[in-house]
Amino acid sequence: MENENSELKKQKEAEDICMSCGACCQTYRVSFHWKEAETLDIPEDLIEPVNNIFVCLAGTNLASPRCKMLDGKVGEKVKCNMYEKRPSPCHEVKVGDDKCNRARLRHGLPPITPS
Image (cartoon, rainbow, N blue to C red; front, side, top):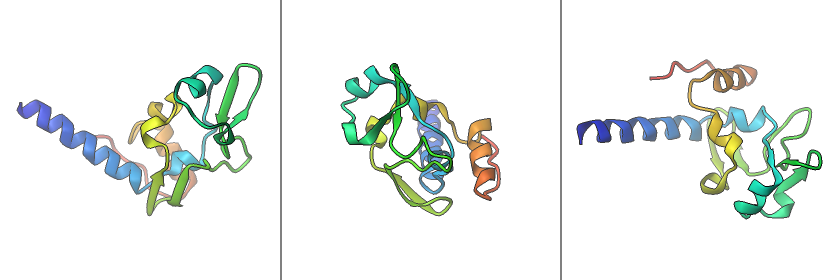
């Protein structure tokens, strides 16, 4: 029970860090198989074709990407408007991992040491 509470606390802390950051949402293209968009029921206006197999979240296929579903200011307070239904690439970036910290550095934010 104690380990379970500890894990839930760590998960909540990680989510809190993400909700004040959002750097990854304004750094990387979020591309995934078109079938995943269909399975998650992501509206067509929120995806853009990459090729015959992959799509990406709207706004992330630009030279200066910013996901259309991101609200707020990176590094201060942000909100993902599809957090519960976000595609698999969004689950791959973890607080304090290499991708997270590269995105943070791109936006002038200090790196995070994962707990």
